[in-house]
Length: 90
Image (cartoon, rainbow, N blue to C red; front, side, top):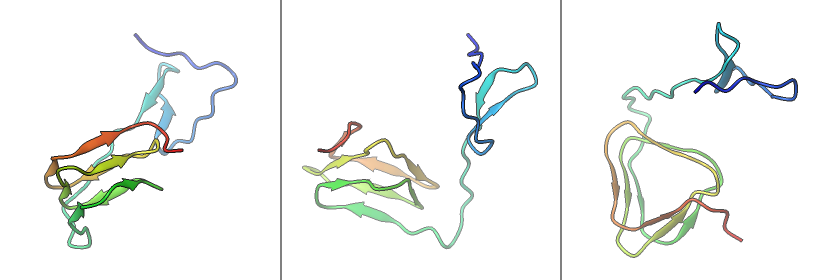
């Protein structure tokens, strides 16, 4: 079901746009393999302070990563052996 914007919707044209039918649309994210992307391993509890862009991402066993509303983007493999908390860390 499409979502039709009201006059109070903020459209940033980078991630949210109005399509040709005047419906809100989220642009898909793509990551191309790039030598500048590093591998990231979380070995202790962590709260994200921004989106994470990496080649491979690993969350070790017993580790909790709180996303705080941010996202992970992996060009390669995302391995979660721990816990991802999507809420805001107090």
